[in-house]
Image 1 (cartoon, rainbow, N blue to C red):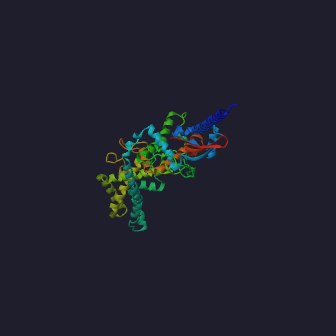
Image 2 (image 1 turned 90 degrees about the vertical axis):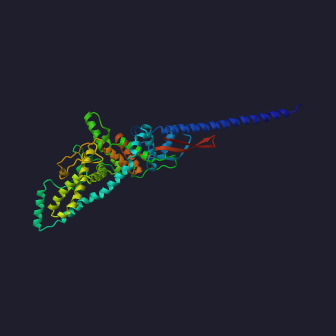
Image 3 (image 1 turned 120 degrees about the vertical axis):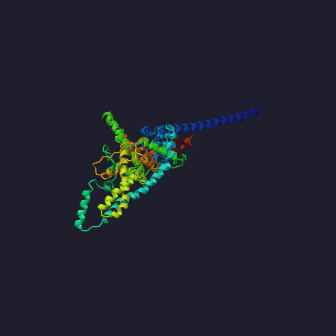
Length: 485
């Protein structure tokens, strides 16, 4: 009989070795399955984010998934369904964080715009404007102060006329008739009366410029309606509202959206090339888009008038400041004031009337300046005796409808677009961002027929928890993230 101690030992050792090898194989299979699951999830999320909206990228250089997938109604199930389509049918997905273009007042949109502008043009594009921002703010303050003066001119003049002595109703009537006969040239306040009665556009529109009648529904704009909102936290760019960043974003607006002057120029070029070549900008829902981004009104007319009125006040402040230094023009205003005061039978009010005439003259010159700017020409920033355009005699008929004081271009002047650039900077940058998204959204609908398109359905970043079962009861959960950065 032989003992079996060695056989039992070897059997035990063999069992242990087999168990060890099988354990290693099982661990390898588990880790391989985990890695394959991660690869599948990564491949799926890359594929989903590879379905970015092409027209949005082509026209506005923005990467985003159109999360409603052509329905106009965003739900997370649609995005998860696309993940399953790309090979994750066996996984459960839970979206733990997501970001839309409109989140945080358009933070994601603004970040992508800045990245594009920096890579395409560089920060040097706006360095020439960084030193002008304080000047823009000063001019804006002057314009605001001038608004109060402008609103009191006609009131003061009417009070003076009412205070004129009347010997009798008949005598008064004869006096007024005689005054009108002795003033064939008209009144220096005619232009302001026309502005008060019919609005600024009635006197500043050039003859060859047709006012757009387009308008939009403000309640349907991303800046006004209730929006889908994301959740979770993502890295954000710092100093997004700094001076250089704001100027760079505003250049994006200037380059990608039309305004009252560029719209006219593009249309003229299209007409010159012939009817066979279609102008895409005519398909947009507003013609004066940059003015909308500044003013936020529902119609082209309202937006243009709001922007032009700001220009008018700034120009009026500059022109008024010059008139106070020009002794010759002061003398002309004084002579006219004496004539008017005599006709009104209140010679003691000549000095008050003189100051009102100077204000009205500054306003009239501002009207000519605006006509110059709307014609695509440069208007002088600082006035002097050489570049002053409106003689006092022309002020008496300005606004009557028969004159055409369009103004001459000044070589070293300022353009309409430069005023828009300044106004964009002076506006709240978050409001500018959201109104820009309004225009992107509207143009995607009108130019490309994407009626379902909504900026708050456009996804830029997402993070998911993914769960997959391994060997039946073993569940493996892991995160996956993708963002356009």
